[in-house]
Image 1 (cartoon, one colour):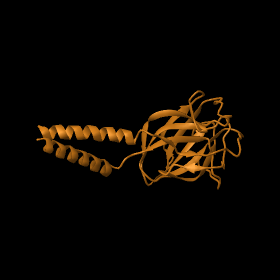
Image 2 (cartoon, rainbow, N blue to C red; image 1 turned 90 degrees about the vertical axis):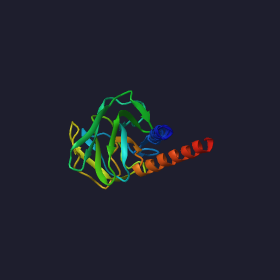
Image 3 (cartoon, one colour; image 1 turned 90 degrees about the horizontal axis):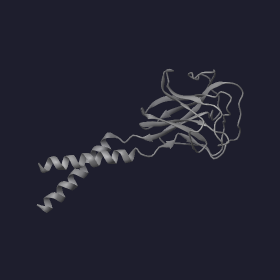
Image 4 (cartoon, rainbow, N blue to C red; image 1 turned 180 degrees about the vertical axis):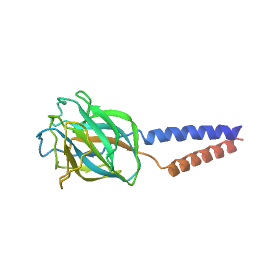
Length: 201
Protein backbone atom coordinates (compact mmCIF):
# COMPACT_ATOMS: atom_id res chain seq x y z
CA UNK A 1 0.00 0.00 0.00
CA UNK A 2 2.80 2.35 0.97
CA UNK A 3 4.69 1.56 -2.26
CA UNK A 4 1.63 2.46 -4.32
CA UNK A 5 1.28 5.77 -2.50
CA UNK A 6 4.94 6.54 -3.14
CA UNK A 7 4.55 5.74 -6.82
CA UNK A 8 1.46 7.93 -7.13
CA UNK A 9 3.20 10.80 -5.39
CA UNK A 10 6.29 10.48 -7.57
CA UNK A 11 4.22 10.42 -10.75
CA UNK A 12 2.30 13.50 -9.64
CA UNK A 13 5.53 15.37 -8.94
CA UNK A 14 6.99 14.15 -12.22
CA UNK A 15 3.95 15.39 -14.14
CA UNK A 16 4.15 18.77 -12.40
CA UNK A 17 7.86 19.04 -13.16
CA UNK A 18 7.20 18.18 -16.78
CA UNK A 19 4.67 20.98 -17.00
CA UNK A 20 7.08 23.44 -15.43
CA UNK A 21 9.85 22.45 -17.85
CA UNK A 22 7.49 23.14 -20.75
CA UNK A 23 5.92 26.30 -19.34
CA UNK A 24 8.21 28.96 -20.84
CA UNK A 25 7.96 29.68 -24.55
CA UNK A 26 10.58 31.64 -26.47
CA UNK A 27 10.67 33.23 -29.89
CA UNK A 28 12.30 31.17 -32.63
CA UNK A 29 14.09 34.29 -33.88
CA UNK A 30 14.32 37.86 -32.66
CA UNK A 31 16.47 40.93 -33.29
CA UNK A 32 17.30 44.23 -31.66
CA UNK A 33 16.10 46.39 -34.56
CA UNK A 34 15.06 46.08 -38.20
CA UNK A 35 17.21 47.58 -40.92
CA UNK A 36 14.37 48.02 -43.39
CA UNK A 37 10.56 47.92 -43.41
CA UNK A 38 9.17 47.25 -46.85
CA UNK A 39 6.27 45.92 -48.87
CA UNK A 40 6.14 45.29 -52.62
CA UNK A 41 3.17 43.08 -53.36
CA UNK A 42 1.63 39.98 -51.86
CA UNK A 43 3.95 37.16 -50.87
CA UNK A 44 4.01 33.87 -49.05
CA UNK A 45 7.37 34.30 -47.38
CA UNK A 46 9.42 33.29 -44.37
CA UNK A 47 12.42 31.13 -43.65
CA UNK A 48 13.80 27.60 -43.58
CA UNK A 49 14.96 26.13 -40.26
CA UNK A 50 16.23 22.87 -38.83
CA UNK A 51 15.15 21.52 -35.44
CA UNK A 52 18.11 20.55 -33.24
CA UNK A 53 16.14 19.33 -30.20
CA UNK A 54 12.52 18.15 -29.94
CA UNK A 55 10.27 21.19 -29.48
CA UNK A 56 6.62 22.16 -29.32
CA UNK A 57 5.39 25.19 -31.22
CA UNK A 58 3.00 27.14 -28.98
CA UNK A 59 2.12 30.15 -31.14
CA UNK A 60 2.61 31.58 -34.61
CA UNK A 61 3.39 35.23 -35.22
CA UNK A 62 3.69 38.04 -37.73
CA UNK A 63 5.99 41.06 -37.79
CA UNK A 64 4.57 44.36 -36.50
CA UNK A 65 7.00 46.92 -37.92
CA UNK A 66 6.18 49.86 -35.65
CA UNK A 67 4.63 47.91 -32.78
CA UNK A 68 1.43 49.89 -33.34
CA UNK A 69 -0.72 46.93 -34.46
CA UNK A 70 -1.31 45.20 -37.76
CA UNK A 71 -3.54 46.59 -40.48
CA UNK A 72 -4.90 43.19 -41.55
CA UNK A 73 -4.77 39.54 -40.53
CA UNK A 74 -2.13 37.16 -41.86
CA UNK A 75 -2.19 33.41 -42.25
CA UNK A 76 0.98 31.85 -40.86
CA UNK A 77 1.93 28.19 -41.20
CA UNK A 78 4.74 25.67 -40.87
CA UNK A 79 5.45 23.24 -43.72
CA UNK A 80 7.52 20.09 -43.80
CA UNK A 81 10.34 19.84 -46.35
CA UNK A 82 8.00 18.14 -48.84
CA UNK A 83 5.62 21.10 -48.87
CA UNK A 84 2.88 19.69 -46.63
CA UNK A 85 1.23 22.31 -44.42
CA UNK A 86 1.46 20.95 -40.86
CA UNK A 87 -0.06 23.68 -38.73
CA UNK A 88 -1.40 27.18 -39.34
CA UNK A 89 -3.38 30.02 -37.83
CA UNK A 90 -4.36 33.61 -38.52
CA UNK A 91 -2.50 36.39 -36.71
CA UNK A 92 -4.88 39.33 -36.36
CA UNK A 93 -4.78 42.97 -35.28
CA UNK A 94 -4.92 43.09 -31.49
CA UNK A 95 -3.04 39.81 -30.95
CA UNK A 96 -0.35 39.87 -28.26
CA UNK A 97 2.82 41.80 -29.11
CA UNK A 98 6.05 40.18 -27.93
CA UNK A 99 9.23 41.79 -29.18
CA UNK A 100 8.77 42.67 -32.84
CA UNK A 101 5.97 40.16 -33.50
CA UNK A 102 2.29 39.65 -32.72
CA UNK A 103 1.34 36.06 -31.85
CA UNK A 104 -1.72 33.85 -31.95
CA UNK A 105 -1.61 30.83 -29.62
CA UNK A 106 -2.12 27.31 -30.99
CA UNK A 107 -2.41 23.87 -29.42
CA UNK A 108 1.20 22.74 -28.83
CA UNK A 109 2.51 21.21 -32.06
CA UNK A 110 5.49 18.83 -31.96
CA UNK A 111 8.51 19.27 -34.25
CA UNK A 112 11.08 16.47 -34.24
CA UNK A 113 14.82 16.97 -33.84
CA UNK A 114 16.90 16.33 -36.94
CA UNK A 115 14.13 17.51 -39.27
CA UNK A 116 13.89 20.52 -41.59
CA UNK A 117 10.86 22.79 -41.87
CA UNK A 118 9.91 26.14 -43.30
CA UNK A 119 7.57 28.79 -41.95
CA UNK A 120 5.68 31.19 -44.19
CA UNK A 121 3.07 33.93 -43.93
CA UNK A 122 0.87 35.89 -46.28
CA UNK A 123 2.11 39.47 -46.29
CA UNK A 124 -0.84 41.24 -47.87
CA UNK A 125 0.09 44.93 -47.90
CA UNK A 126 1.87 44.73 -44.51
CA UNK A 127 5.55 45.58 -44.14
CA UNK A 128 8.12 42.83 -43.62
CA UNK A 129 11.86 43.05 -42.94
CA UNK A 130 15.15 41.28 -43.62
CA UNK A 131 18.79 41.45 -42.56
CA UNK A 132 17.87 42.84 -39.10
CA UNK A 133 20.55 43.87 -36.63
CA UNK A 134 21.15 41.89 -33.43
CA UNK A 135 19.67 38.75 -35.00
CA UNK A 136 19.44 35.80 -32.58
CA UNK A 137 18.05 32.27 -32.96
CA UNK A 138 16.66 30.00 -30.24
CA UNK A 139 19.29 27.31 -29.47
CA UNK A 140 16.79 24.50 -30.16
CA UNK A 141 16.69 25.37 -33.86
CA UNK A 142 19.04 26.65 -36.56
CA UNK A 143 18.22 29.25 -39.20
CA UNK A 144 19.00 27.97 -42.72
CA UNK A 145 17.88 30.55 -45.28
CA UNK A 146 15.05 32.78 -46.41
CA UNK A 147 12.15 31.49 -48.51
CA UNK A 148 9.49 33.19 -50.63
CA UNK A 149 6.92 32.75 -53.39
CA UNK A 150 4.71 35.40 -54.97
CA UNK A 151 1.17 34.51 -53.84
CA UNK A 152 -1.95 36.01 -52.32
CA UNK A 153 -2.51 32.85 -50.25
CA UNK A 154 -0.38 30.76 -47.91
CA UNK A 155 1.71 28.38 -50.02
CA UNK A 156 5.00 26.51 -49.66
CA UNK A 157 7.73 29.09 -50.42
CA UNK A 158 10.21 27.67 -52.94
CA UNK A 159 12.62 30.50 -53.80
CA UNK A 160 15.50 31.73 -51.66
CA UNK A 161 18.42 34.17 -51.56
CA UNK A 162 21.48 34.50 -49.29
CA UNK A 163 19.61 37.06 -47.15
CA UNK A 164 18.74 36.66 -43.48
CA UNK A 165 14.95 36.89 -43.70
CA UNK A 166 12.18 37.27 -44.57
CA UNK A 167 10.26 38.34 -41.41
CA UNK A 168 7.23 38.08 -41.94
CA UNK A 169 6.46 35.12 -39.84
CA UNK A 170 7.83 33.84 -36.57
CA UNK A 171 6.86 31.28 -33.95
CA UNK A 172 7.24 30.63 -30.25
CA UNK A 173 8.50 27.27 -29.03
CA UNK A 174 9.37 25.32 -25.92
CA UNK A 175 11.79 22.45 -25.49
CA UNK A 176 10.39 18.96 -24.94
CA UNK A 177 12.22 17.16 -22.09
CA UNK A 178 13.84 13.88 -23.04
CA UNK A 179 12.01 10.77 -21.69
CA UNK A 180 15.22 9.48 -20.11
CA UNK A 181 15.64 12.71 -18.16
CA UNK A 182 12.08 12.57 -16.85
CA UNK A 183 12.44 8.90 -15.88
CA UNK A 184 15.62 9.67 -13.94
CA UNK A 185 13.87 12.55 -12.20
CA UNK A 186 10.88 10.36 -11.31
CA UNK A 187 13.08 7.53 -10.07
CA UNK A 188 15.10 9.91 -7.92
CA UNK A 189 11.98 11.40 -6.38
CA UNK A 190 10.53 7.99 -5.62
CA UNK A 191 13.81 6.86 -4.07
CA UNK A 192 14.07 9.92 -1.83
CA UNK A 193 10.51 9.50 -0.63
CA UNK A 194 11.04 5.79 0.06
CA UNK A 195 14.13 6.52 2.18
CA UNK A 196 12.29 9.21 4.06
CA UNK A 197 9.37 6.86 4.82
CA UNK A 198 11.71 4.05 5.93
CA UNK A 199 13.42 6.38 8.43
CA UNK A 200 10.05 7.27 9.95
CA UNK A 201 9.00 3.62 10.23
